[in-house]
Length: 116
Length: 107
Image (cartoon, rainbow over all chains, first blue to last red; front, side, top):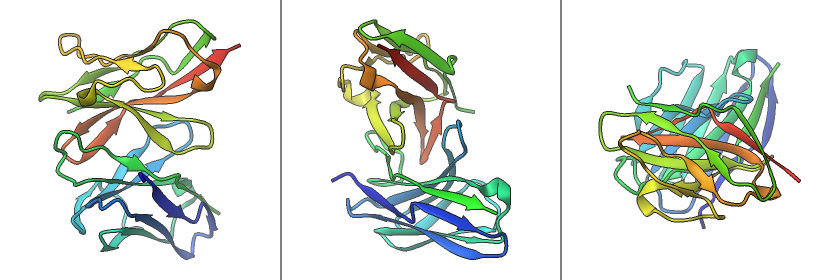
């Protein structure tokens, strides 16, 4: 099973709303990632968690707040977003976050976010 | 800084024809390279990784360090190969993607 599950699949939120995206994997992976993908563009890394600790934040605005409650779960809390934040948000996981050889990243289907 | 370049945004070939999707990289160390595919309305899936030297769905890719390339090839294209293809390079914990090539296979 190489599945990363994301909920919700679609989310529409207003600029004053607070919402969360959720991600789950049961592969025993110890690294989890959030990527953002705009239309017709490649995914861009936002955050990396390794062994439940935030190890990389790619200068993401504070209106995006990641959380890793345990090794299987990853959340992305959203608050006061802008319309330009509308995108596909991809969760991913890998065996560990060391970048060692053979460490393949597996992606979820994504959550389509629209900010109105 | 590491960079992945896919020079073709769009590539269109006929069914049964050979396919080559180009990927060049710049990286100072020993690169770890991947090809991911995104079919319409499906998740980003791993297609190939250079360290395993495998062939998936008839696709192969060889790392050429001299030319800093990792081109994806298939001898006979099939209609179900139509998709978005991303070449990616792993550095530490970061997977850096090229801009992608949209491959269309015409019947």
